[in-house]
Length: 343
Image: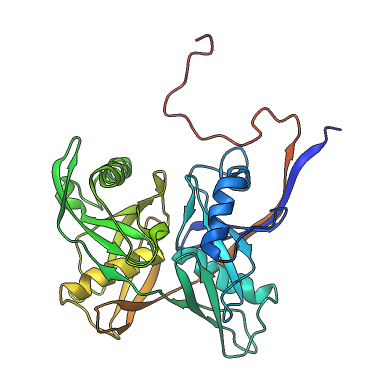
């Protein structure tokens, strides 16, 4: 029998169709006094964990994962790193929704019917989570309150191959997104081929990272363009529901509406004077299953706390192995083109 170099246990869930792979055993301890320091440790010394579980052959180009770790924030029950095909997200709404259910089911937090409250430490900061936990029924919806989110800078012009000059709005929902209606790209969210929308979103991310300078006011680790949200053009306050397509990380396609993306879109809507506290907005992504976003509060600086609500569902669990003689020990990404095997 070939010896095993690494092994992991995991639990898989999804929220609105977007996968969440939670590492339950096999990941090494992370070093650092803060979660951002642990994130750096994962990136520099232990990135094989992400590659083993997110990339092929155990994952795929659109896999998403959670690496639980001990919280350094005194009021948080748990801290987590979020991982994907390119690296480590600073915030993830759909994963937080799935974690809300998992945390209760595993006993990390004791339920207090009818609603259980706990705080989850994310790289962008702690978020308050509420889980419907009836005394005589299954776990229901999960809600979380975002970190302070905000709009800006707005109307940024990017030069995009195949599209020319395109104006995008930048907004922070726990991560920075470029938000653009599909019509500005000469596309239609409902009628254009999905691949055309995805390629345009990937082009915006690439152009935005090259052409824009983004700085977070509090933490340099958070100051980068994470993704692009292509919308159907519907605006909060003007329409009760919307749909969007989010592309993030290394061109990954979100099946959900993206929880942090909804927070970013509501921050834009509030800046435009379209929606205020207490008003709900349902947003669906690729799967068609919506999350609900509500502006919870607005501070004097115009920063918002947004509540996002959804449901998480289990899809599996198991054990992965990486054998010592595996020719692909760190996983691999689908190549853009096949190289000549004799070249």
